[in-house]
Amino acid sequence: MRTPFRDRLSSGTVLFDGAMGTMLYSKGIYLNQCFDELNLTNPHLVKQVHEDYVRAGADVIETNTFGASSFKLEPYGLAAKMREINLAGARIAREVAGEDRYVAGAVGPLGVPIEPLGRIGLDEARAEFAARIRALVEGGVDLIVLETFPYLPELEQAILAAHDVCSLPVVAQVVLANSTRLVMGSSIEEAVERVDAAGADVVGLNCAVGPKEMLDAVETMVTRTGRPISLQPNAGAPRIVEGRTMYLSSPEYFAEYSKRFIQTGARIVGGCCGTTPEHIRAMRRAISAIEPPPARPHLVRAESVEAPPSVTPIRREDKSRLACRLADGKFITMCELVSPRGIDASKVIEQARRLAHHGVDAINIPDGPRASSRMSALALAVLIQRSVNIEPLLHYTCRDRNVIGMQGDLLGAWALGVRNILAVTGDPPKLGSYPDATAVYDVDSIGLTQLLRRLNHGLDLAGSPIGEPTGFHVGVGVNPGAINLDEELRRLDYKIEAGAEFMITQPVFDLAIFERFLARVQHVNIPLITGIWPLVSVRNAEFLNNEVPGAHVPDPVMDRLRAAKSKDEALEVGTAVAREMLEQLRPHAQGVQIAVPFGRVDMVLEILDPVL
Image 1 (cartoon, helix red, strand yellow):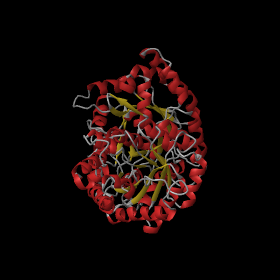
Image 2 (cartoon, helix red, strand yellow):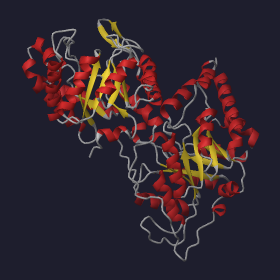
Image 3 (tube, helix red, strand yellow):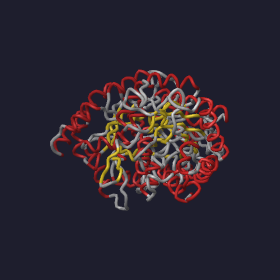
Image 4 (cartoon, one colour):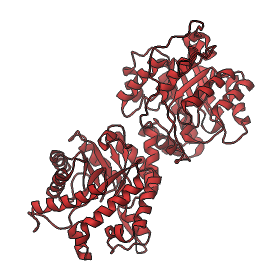
């Protein structure tokens, strides 16, 4: 069952689809044909485009009805079929969207001037919009999107018509001439204020310009409205290449800008002319990289847990060597090693051996990072612990197992000697190579922490005794650079209430962001371990910015990497940046977790040298 769209807006970024016309054109439909008529004459082709966008990860697909006004259909002899075309467009999209995606009824301008510029009166315009919207609502849309409007009085009539017909949410988008003005000359400020006053649920921009000018415009918009903002840029300006209209902005470029849109204040992002499923797929990855998965029901909530009379929980300082050092106030070091993609773990074990030899306290092992398929993190943790005199810190995610499987895994991990667990929700499958894989998420990291606490008190999730208790040393993650820091810190408090004993941050690259975070966690009384990720190249930094949840490499660091003239020089810059961050972060934390990028142990040891 779909969450009502207004509620969905409050829970995170919403990704719309991309261009319909661009995709139909690429499939051989000439520009002089009526694209809207295809809802009747070739619905299978329209359905294919919708399906492509759903597979790319769009949350919302728009109906193929942008130009389906009586006035625009009249030159094709189709004015009498206006209602039929809109109704069919809505039904095709609804069939594809099913219960998992939203359908936006697309409504564009009438295609003729309205008063005082033309012969169509305001009341006639309102009636025409109402007729179109009524058909879309009958076809099952979840919201109305009024898009590509250059003339504010016409858009106001469309908003009023939507309210006349239904109570569905209304997204109202104007079209820019540049970053400060609409095509018809109105300023951005005036447009936002008038659309807001007319009662649109979402105020937005689409078409005509590319991502850069929209980013400049949204910086003005956020100061003028408290409503959610939507942005659907073109893939740059169109170019005529060998007789074909081409848009040249790449999916990667869109991914970078969608992250900037969200960080600046946009709640809805998507694409317009020239964008394709590849652009939307790249944007999906970017969104997943900076936002956690949608909130899931918690089957376990923070509550008091009392061990059975015959059970004595293990004291924190006795749980592991890592726990003992943290309890003693020592500064600890951990290095993150990723499981191999195949069955041979010898290289990773040798890397762990070198790190242990130089005094690193623990090896951090992610569990299917970025929703990738690798050797079991638990298996690698056991192999390292048996081969090397060093403790693993096992990441354990909620993505892949239900609560029955989780309890079985964790009891097995304890029996095999694993003592340190980092409880994480886990990257959603859409972030990785298996976007159609099923994600479980019976609980999130808060519920998992509570589950571990129960096991540590000799109880399973149902409250049944398990005999001898586990004694897991339980850590949790936290993101100092979270877009919604209030929500991040609220969740951190819940994690601590559920039983977290230490916390590890996402990689920190910006001291100002970290200091803002520190000021907000003065009340927290568990050890803080800071994350550091040594950068090896500009591409590595761009990857972090776009595809690693919670990571943000600031512009000054990016500029230093871009100035490097060779790979070796880039490595030197990355090492220097990591050393600087370690020096700045050390007084504020009780430890550091450092990634080992591409197995570069020497680089990491050079960075850690001052603290080993």
